[in-house]
Image (cartoon, rainbow, N blue to C red; front, side, top):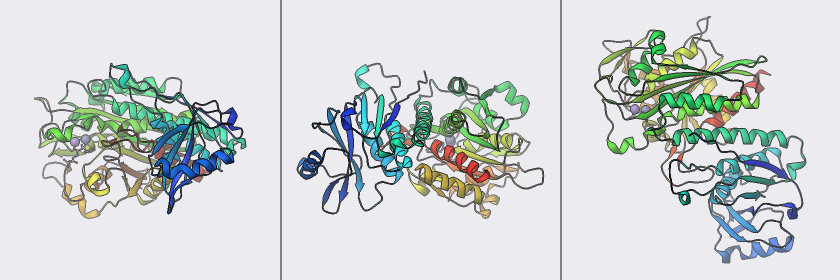
Length: 507
Ligand code: BES
Ligand code: MN
Ligand code: ZN
């Protein structure tokens, strides 16, 4: 059911005749005086002729403009493909610009089996970015459509044409690109899966399936176990659904681990709002409300496959938020993992309830840091739009997440945890209420989560950051760059980069 997509990636340095791919991709930028053909390995005459005809061909070099032309002699590929990299005023050889240009081309070449990409790359980092973009762009979700024609076959193999192919560091970099792209694509597929098929129990099964063959332990806590251990947040959110909730604990614990990190993911397989029912229009994308759990699961699996020396535990907080006679009512009080009580004033603020349990349970194991990922608030989109995620929490961890995101090519922006928001969550009947100040509601939610991050033995707070990906997790618009419609797989790349960065700092 939850099929995974893998693309074969390889690199060659010279001899275009040896390009056995059906299509060869090269770049075009938007210069001040029109389109500019970027550095490419075509024979000089062919390159000059092509450069001179760009304008008449109507090619502008804009991002996401992908055009196919007949091949030229001395090139193995049958077809040339020009991919736009956008305005040449920015840095078009930045790793993210290359990732997007390669991704857009490969995405739009769905149906072609093999593609070679010859974008301008000199470093291993740039070549790996092209490979990663291509593998991300090769994603397709076939879903449950029965008409075969509706789904074009994805690109199956990508050859990167780069002078860096001779560098011994390229092979591991390509391997990393393939592993990371596989993790992002697996995240997309879980999120795209309809809630009729993906609910807490089947999500837990999928986690076990995806972990097969890796040195990873998957423990599924069912509703009886959740009851016994006091996971009141997950149980409270899940009790309105005919599909019972689950907590899935995924552990990667190599013997030579240097640090111990925890990830917590929001896994609401469908968010109807519960008794505080959402309007129909707001429910349409709510299968994406488990994107945080999918991201932390697949980031952990990527870290395990990369064999990084870190002890990593992911907590997937899985529940379906439905209205029914058994659902939590506004004004009910829940006792969360660890004993804190919460008055539920709005059942649609359910993410923070399941995450509270996850953060408290993760804290009990005293990790060196905790990152949580959640499609937590509509306010996230009001603050930062649909393509920029937010990071909040302790300054050091937030800054490290921002730096990791920058390196990975994902857009994250730090936001504060204003102290004055805490009293807005006060409740007359419980330790705190699940809603508070509406203005800046993304920060209010983060301030709520902060209450459930535990302490070290010496009384200091466990370093923590919260990633709100509500907007960027799901693309309701058209595909762009390497990003498809619907699920985007956001945060996986940032999490993997974060773990790598922590290891570099502790080395
Ligand atoms: N899952 C939603 C947040 C969301 C909205 C994610 C849109 C992605 C796109 C969350 O559970 C929610 O409903 N939050 C409420 C909180 C409010 C009741 C305080 C919201 O944002 O309206
Ligand atoms: Mn909700
Ligand atoms: Zn939600």
